[in-house]
Length: 248
Image 1: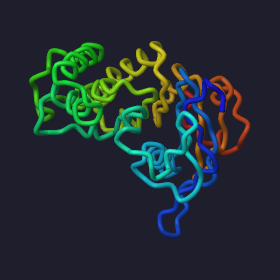
Image 2: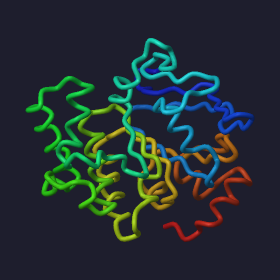
Image 3: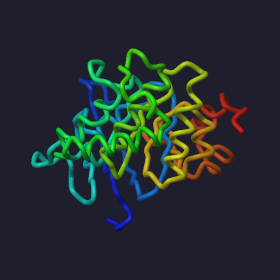
Image 4: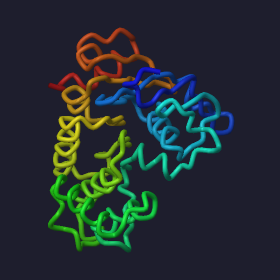
């Protein structure tokens, strides 16, 4: 494995009963890459992310993080997730905690940081996503876009090497989508390594270093945004992208 590769997926499959949702998935993720995974609903995109984050157990295959197979029983999921964080479409904030505590709890519980260090770190990342004025607010007092920015700050506070985004704008009102995409674009510009499952084609085209098109549980095609959006090779990719001809 190259020193630059963070994550390597080998022959990954996932069955739910008799339904095979992922079929022999192979790809690698290198430092600094922003990979957008696109495809129709039900194509296996979110299941792939959930397997990478160990929220689902793959049926077969390997997931190598820094050369170690994370499916090995010796791997502690919370410690691994601190390095490979995830931002969910439904935010998954703790409703009984304010914004600041939401961004501190993982640091103290998983990383063993002191409250003082966790607070300082949380404040820094809340500032980074434009949410430092809301540290005492509870999630119910926030808009969807604000909740998602807090969720991103919470993930960043763990200082992960790789950040997974599972359709981070799909639960948002149209007017708040832009504020979350702007934060993600800034992270990409800062060099954060990201895998983003998204229906936001403009983001995939403008921000990604690589785009993966999934269809029916397989990686149908992958390449640079220019290759995928301007010169797709597979008929399935062409048919999917024909719905998004107005992407600039």
